[in-house]
Image (cartoon, rainbow, N blue to C red; front, side):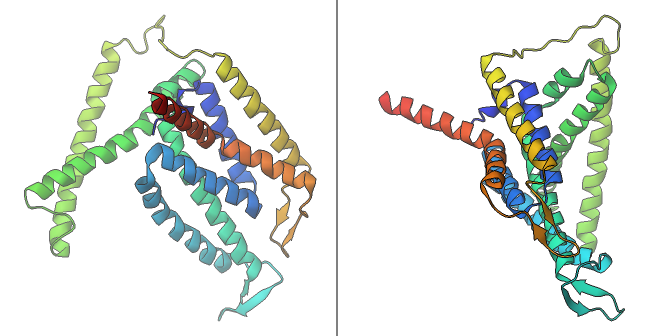
Length: 296
């Protein structure tokens, strides 16, 4: 599916991800965390596909459970005592719930970054920060680009090794280790060679010379202005809600939260329409194209 949100101005894209990532890390209310997690899954499915999301969730769910079990081992606060460890420390319900909340936050951020890496490309990042922090923006954009490129190249190397009878998933442990070392050696060589080629290409293009200009094709049109107003309203409204504790939820010493009323629901609704924005845009675009296609 073509991502309509990708076509928006880089400033709109960056502001959106700044808001959703910031609130995903700050808000610990279960309803808000659920909204962010579901919307992150839906948007990642549109940008990366279901297989990529399911693969990420295979790693996220163990992280959530590990955090839920590890947190009570070090955090013994809370008044609802479930049992005593042999060391005499307490296992409390509040520490388990807090661990689950922390794990959900980590999983949500990882899913948002799946879409972030797809939408905020290296050229967009350089366009936004190239004049402010040129060296840092270049390093970050190259790093973000290198990770998926390295993974794609490693898949090619593994497939090539498999085609000559060196399957990394079969054979004894010693055999698989030898193949893994071979693949690692090939990837290190490729990475060093790629770095040299990149440096030569940058030098031939005049990187670092005084007076060098940058080309960009991005234009801030009326659609982007409306999106900025929309995101600005949601950001300010949610910030006000955070300041007045409309998302108030605490785990220690006992679980306490703000009662559900019209005001708190309004903030949760605004958070929902903020997180779901790209999903709705893509859905409207898909319906539009289906309507056009049906008239042909």
